[in-house]
Image 1 (cartoon, helix red, strand yellow):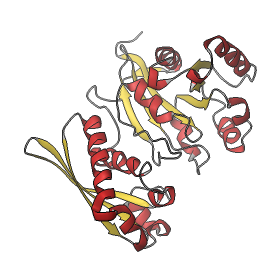
Image 2 (cartoon, rainbow, N blue to C red):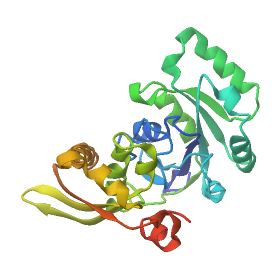
Image 3 (cartoon, one colour):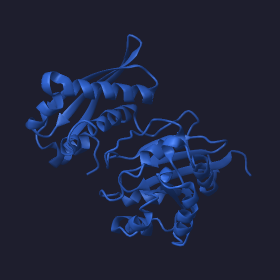
Length: 289
């Protein structure tokens, strides 16, 4: 093998809503880079994490749910697809139009099926699910996984490595992500909203980080929560500011876990009427139009 040639490339993590894509990316890369929420469709933009297992280099890309206006062009530059499905419902899920379209677009790529939430299935039955998935003849490999327990993660990583092409290293060794720090911090905040606010209010609240700096040995973050309706402002603040305080507390913990630094978070609530219907606002807040 020529000097400098290693397994190196992009692995796309894709799937339907609430299948555990973000948890899987974090487990594979041993990070907390992709925020995890119990509510579906919390990932809105691709989040990248670059890891170096052995002498290899893999850029994993966590993507929004396939059924939510998925940008199929991202498939073109992926070297490997990791498709995450719920082990108990994968047979039914494969019949969904959005997933069928995705598989058609990705048919020329190696597709590894990650059967998520496999801890909900008795160990003796997992082999039967894998055999059933093999009969579809759609997948290069099939691996049962439970990211939160670490189950199946080494096997999945080895499968990805077997299918990543050999080439020169794509990124310098010290690069851990292709996303900006401000964006990743804003996502940590935004994800907390889905566990506290009504879903429609959380979905229409943008997070805009104005400052990240060091103050008194802590990471200082100033951010705006921007709602699309004036009536939502009071909901975010809550009685005597309790809701905003709760958001602040959980977000500070999430940011601290992600960055490895103690965080002082300064949150403000602002109104920008109907920003979700304005293309300029959507672009400003980091949404793809």
